Amino acid sequence: MTETTSKNPWLWIPTLYYTQGIPYIIVVTVSVIMYKDLGISNTQLAFFTSVLSLPWALKPLWSPFIDVFKTKRWWTYTMQAIIGLSFAGAAIAMKTPYFFEVSLGFLFLVAFASSTHDIAADGFYMLALSDEKQSFFVGIRSTFFRLAMWSGEGLFVVLAGIMATRTMDSALAWTVVLGLVAFIMILMFGYHQKMLPYPVEDKPAEQADESPLQAVWSTIAEFFKKEQIGLAVTFVLLYRFGEGQLVKMAAPFLMDTIEAGGLGLSVTDVGYINGVIGLLALTAGGILGGIVISKHGLKAWMWPMIGIMNLPNLSYWYLAAAQPDNFWIISSFVGLEKFGYGFGFTAFLMYLIYLARGPFKTAHYAFGTALMAFGMSIPGAISGAVQEAIGYELFFIWVLLSAIPIVIITPFIRIEKDFGKKKDT
Image (tube, rainbow, N blue to C red):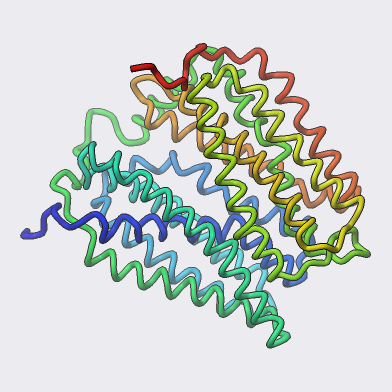
């Protein structure tokens, strides 16, 4: 084979991580806006879009098979093809009588292929680059993943809103958007099939004495031998119990009519708020969170960051109570909540790193992120039913009260004093 690992990383890392972000944001976030726009009830859209996120929670279970069969390169571009075809199927389904059920099936295929793509692409990144280049490009990959977030929550949603306004046909608008996403994914499949390098180490792993399933079980067993593991798992599952409900109902609240307790915003408005103002606030909160932890350590900031993450949820209670019609007032309060979430979420990610320490840190971090996904899926699944039972105003009070369990648990979590603190040189 004449191909080598010498292809310029700039030719494939930006596109690879943009491609990784697109299906995730469409399935987890944009689908909520789409189904709300198409008239699906809050109970149904919250439950079923939460189910769609489960493959990302369960992906550690099949990750060993990515090592044993084929190459990371093959898994990466093959999953992109499957994602593209599945989005095409969802697009076609939009104009059928059973669009909800059929499109959910295709989006579940997207979720499964995308979570598998995450495993393969991240593994390929480590195989194709030296340690020095991995460090250099980690910011680049993060930037292009965030660009995918902006494209999904912002650009694609705004495009759907504009088309729906001009054609008076929301189903057609979302057909075009999903078709565009399918085209991008198929284009990336062809591009990466050509442009991804061929790392020498990228080959199926040789079978050890134990099977892949046995290896997974051994790694899981070691995870549950960690100190305070029962309390740690509870902490991870409850950390975003309130936020998991708010995330699912935020867009429906913004889009629902004034009579239904919402703010009556258009799809285009929601795209601008989430894709521009919200994303900037979220990013700023995350950056500031990282700075304060590096100065004082995770232990000093854990409890304050939990408070800063949850207290801004009062913004949504105010919006539900006052129902302002000024776009900038609404955007400011949504931005405040996003900033608090980004700030507090930094502490959560640092705790997952702390929990993963040890000889299996890569796998144990994956287990931690899987628990994190469950911690969002479970409250997200019930959020629609809760909101429809008590209305938006009481729902956002309930969201705030949902933070009480994590506030109670946090003082009992043991964290080394200097963990996360930047060492003096």
